[in-house]
Length: 127
Image (tube, rainbow, N blue to C red; front, top):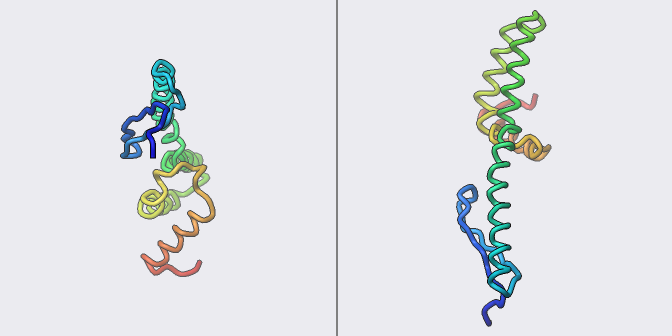
């Protein structure tokens, strides 16, 4: 098999723990260098946008939920015991499994798998 006539660009991506390689589809080195610069900048932007994604994780929303519950307690709309029970459930079960996941990625199948694992691990009833 002959070598490709196109230049390739590559870099190590720590978030994926692997080396990523892509064809520039350029035969001239000068064009390949321009492509490589643009491609690298796109990867850097992806990494920066990942910080925004972390702000939309299940853990971030759980923290906002607890802040809302604290305000409800101060207004007399919620009892402290309910906040405590919700916090225990979040800290012990939900956040270890779902905390790092972006909320848009949480779907029926993920929740169903989570419930099945929780049921098997702790021997919970169907309710």
